[in-house]
Length: 324
Image 1 (cartoon, rainbow, N blue to C red):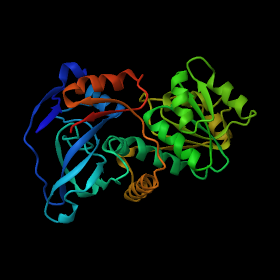
Image 2 (image 1 turned 90 degrees about the vertical axis):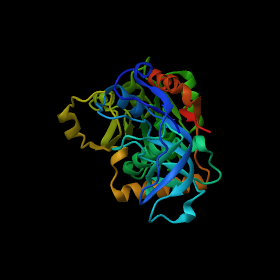
Image 3 (image 1 turned 135 degrees about the vertical axis):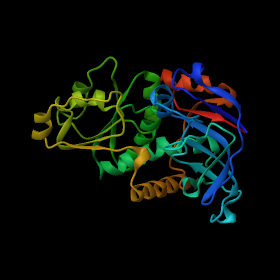
């Protein structure tokens, strides 16, 4: 089968190889999926650049395709099923940047007929992250919510889900084009974080009260806002990422505002949270309530360019590799 892989960490064009590998087989409890698409996420790029490896890595945790074979213990009726995948390369070396993948049956989720394979490659990380974040945020009916990176892959879905939950979305964006993208998903107020004071704009937009919830993609940047009146008393921060390993906090400000901090890693949800999120994704897809945005599509031979596009951070929409 065709595949992309790397043996060492480094820049994509220095370490990524495209070639042929043996087609895997489905072990007991597994399914063999013929992949149609592979999603490229920022975490895939970060892993390739920095996470030490002592083995060959076929990258990417997200993808979608059709089950071609099943291992012992998996119903034969799953053969031919359209599926999307989660955690395909989490804790294991062989991900979705290949024609085929064998993985536990539970990690191949039925993909409704109304959802194409490109959208299916956006579900495992972007949509599940958004679903979990909005779940942890609590009841958002009538609440003002700050979504950082509202036009990003996850933020675009968060914006949609907060809107569906009855919340009012204020979002940070990096350009007018990104603001328009987020507005089409439900964003009501855009803050251009590169040229405006986020704290001052939040206070102006909320009459000085601050927002009830922040759903955050980069706590390294957002932590500094928490002592500046961006949250109401007893407000909540739900965070799924940070661009720095250590963050300083003004403890007194958080204590006297009774701020709640909630962090989660989408790869490491509890079984109950995982199942609830998967059920929610299925319901959203069946009801066709999600907008999917594919920014760029690449063939597998251009996996280096796909990684570099994600690294550049300028593309609006998800980056997907098309395999067939």
